[in-house]
Amino acid sequence: MQNNHKPFDPYKYIPFLIIVFLIAKFIFKTGNLTWFLSSFKSLIFASIIIYLLSPVVRLIKTKLKFRHTISVLLTYFIVFAFIALFIMLIAPTITDSVNALINNFPSTEEMMAYVNNSFLQEFVSADTIDNLIETIDQSVVKFSSNILSFSSSVISSITGFISNLALLILSLFMAFYALRDSEEIPPKLKRLVRAFLPKKYADWTIRVGRLTDKALKQFLIGKMYTCIILGLLVSIAIYVVNMLSPLHIPYAPLMGLIIGLTNIIPYIGPFIGTIPCLFFALFSGVWEAVALLIVVIVMQQIDNIIVSPKIIGNTVGLKPFWVVASVTIGGSFFGAMGMILAVPIASVIIILVEERVARVTP
Image (cartoon, rainbow, N blue to C red; front, side):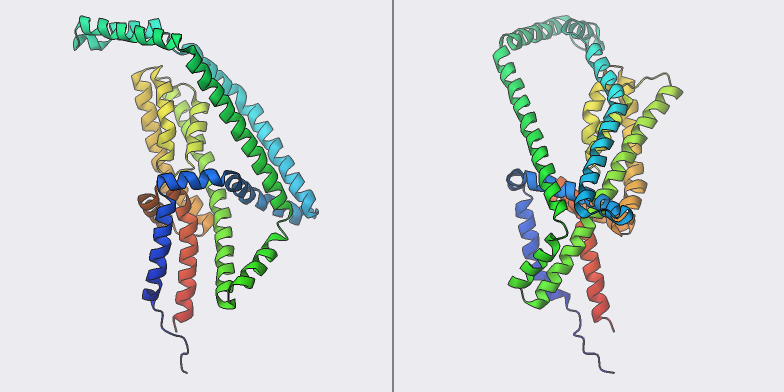
């Protein structure tokens, strides 16, 4: 029987891939990416909310047999109720940690006494230390006299917070309307694509869109799981260190929360979150900071080697090897954003390649 399929020629796709790579490289440059993200902030946040909530809407609609709009409203109610419950449970502990941190923050006099009586005296002359203390005192006086500038910074911070809060509210409304009309949007997008592209390319574009949509949803869900797991692992590990050693690493829930949230950026995210945590731990002692750093490194390695490849690989449908490889390559070329988007993009590419190979292989 004669094989009518043309042999698979990967070289004809090279120009297209080069163009896509150059466009992505241009967008993901720091300045261009900042401009791009700032221009579409509300749309990006709304899209993330849609991807996170659409499975819940679909589950409520399927299992409880509610109308679509009622399912969306019930989903929002459940999410806000869960957030309120979480805040009620975790807020007292975090508040106590923050208050203890503020109360334990050394005063200027204590910091000067620490410098004056520290091991630096073994290596630095007393005159040098006195000059350093005098310089610091002058800086403190200068800072105190410049209270107007400080007030301006506070006002700017409050304005930024209000702006971000308004952005979040706008994104929630956009996500609500998009979820409410989610049954109508896909057919309209399909008609739009078919109106401007030949059938062959329109079918391919729709197929890629479906795969991308599915991969992004699965990736965000998997990443959310890994963030929660890493935050819990760090908090539990800190409690274990405190129980089994004379050390006392403070603010375990707060540190777990910070490191868990920053885990949205693979590999480097938790280490970014570790910086303020180390600052907190230093108030209890140098060895507490060292112990915290060891805890984060160990838990991060467990997350990178075992937890993330397994969970994200299962949710997205990739082998752990491809999860690690895609994140490494994405980070090398496109930085933090490349690391975040690498797994869903790799999932789509691998599926398309496998389908293409299956079609052309006799």
